Each structure stands twice: as structure tokens, then as C-alpha cells.
Amino acid sequence: MPPTDIVLVLTTVPDDERAESLARTLIDERLAACVNVHGPMLSVYRWKGEVESDRERQVVIKTTRERVAEVEARVRQLHTYELPELLVIDVAGGSGAYLAWVGEQTRSG
Figure 1: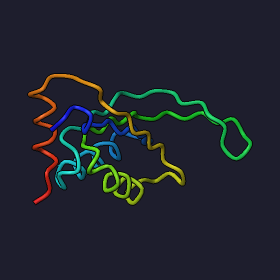
Figure 2: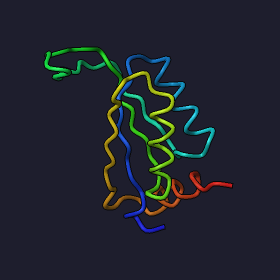
Figure 3: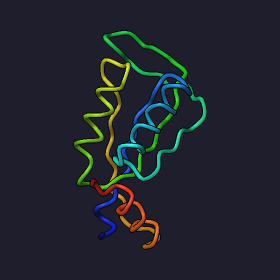
Figure 4: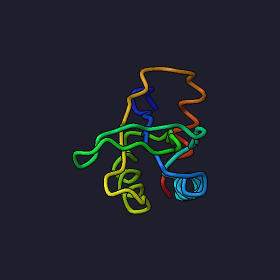
């Protein structure tokens, strides 16, 4: 699998329980090879005309371009936010063996 087929999908969730549940679901369904959940952080943003701030967890989902639509649909289905963050970042390179592993782990069937 070419390195350009590997992507990172970023989202945020409000707490550890939701982060782990999302991560396990994506792994169990082979939509992601690995999901990293970062520790608590403060997010400051404008929402519906008001400046808000919340404690959140950054979730980094390692998957393939082929599975992005399914990952996005599943995140939207499981997410508690009205408008969840969904950023897709192309991986330009990396360890060939690791990138191949991501591809193998996300194959359906």
C-alpha cells in the first residue's frame, strides 16, 4: 500500500470513557489500525456566536483513505457533539512496515 493511502483522522471527545469507546469500536470494526487518545486539553472556540471553552481529549485515528468515509460515518453516529471535528490528514511518508501494517489492519472482510 503506497504511503499516500494512509491518513490520520482527528476528532475530539469530551471525556476518557467516550474516547475509549470510540477507539475500541473503530478497532473492532477494522476501520482503524490504531487510535491514540491524548490526555485532557482545553479547547477554546466560537460556537453559535459565543466563545466557549471545554476540556476534551484529542483522538487520532490511523486508517486508510479507502476507509475514511466509513470512519467519518461511524464517528458521526457515535459522537455526542452536534458538529464533531473531523480532519483528515494525508500521511506523506513513514516506516514502510508500519504503513503496511495500517493497511493490513484496516482491510475489511
